[in-house]
Image 1 (spheres, rainbow, N blue to C red):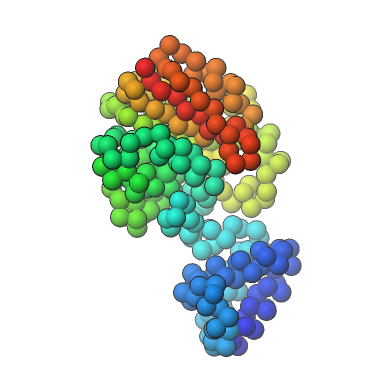
Image 2 (image 1 turned 120 degrees about the horizontal axis):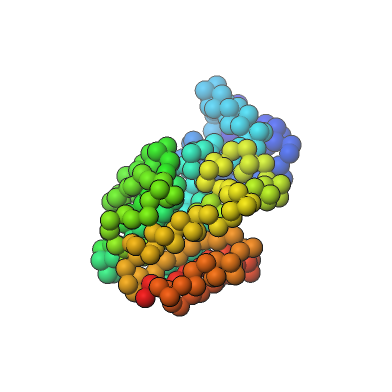
Length: 281
């Protein structure tokens, strides 16, 4: 069998997907497995594939048919131009979070020796990208999940950056015994009642711990973050948060305290309230 025949068989098995999705899947798998970029595929369609190669593609097909995200199948995702190892212990990085990072980078002096904390780091995509963009900063990354931190440490190593990792429960941590110039977080903010609106590939495979909050306490993580800001955000320091579009005004009200100033609510590319910024007096 050659690569052209494998492509035909592969795409024929994925009946539930669109033609563009099938093509993208095949391209990404060939890039990951054979090291062939999309523009090189056409030149290599006559390449012979072994029975071992076919077994690999068959295993991939089985996982894709269950609608497992391609990022988990290949154990790779991309964020801010960087490559990240991902598995089901961490969320797949989202474009909205790239928008949050852009806002952070436009608001700070990248050359200063800042202390930056990423709360709920997951794969460490934010922390790693900040370390790459702010070479003089000291980056800290916190998560409650030991399994997520294993992934995060792998990504720090693979991307050759130094990050100080903290395993801690945000609800039991009000004082980190250190002050930070910048605190950023993309905490869980999807209400349980919103789960019905989400795709099965998210619900069935991505970690619920990193996604959902109780409908009765939708701002529970923001309340916990607020307590940390009061004790650990330096005067003149900034906090940047990704938020649920339905709670922009509630977030503003929560942080409307005498300790803070210069609130900003920012919309994402789709015109939804998705980011929040505040400065400590």
